[in-house]
Image (tube, rainbow, N blue to C red):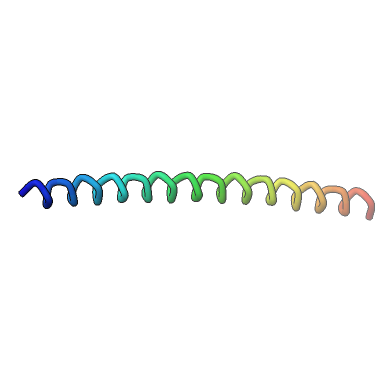
Length: 51
């Protein structure tokens, strides 16, 4: 049982680390998308003022 318990503990830790990393990556992606959208909107605004 000790080997199984160790395996389960390692598996759980790996899964938690994976989920944490996944969530951080999703957050970074969303932040990048927001920044990109802001830049695009700023460019569109400049173009509309130039016309």
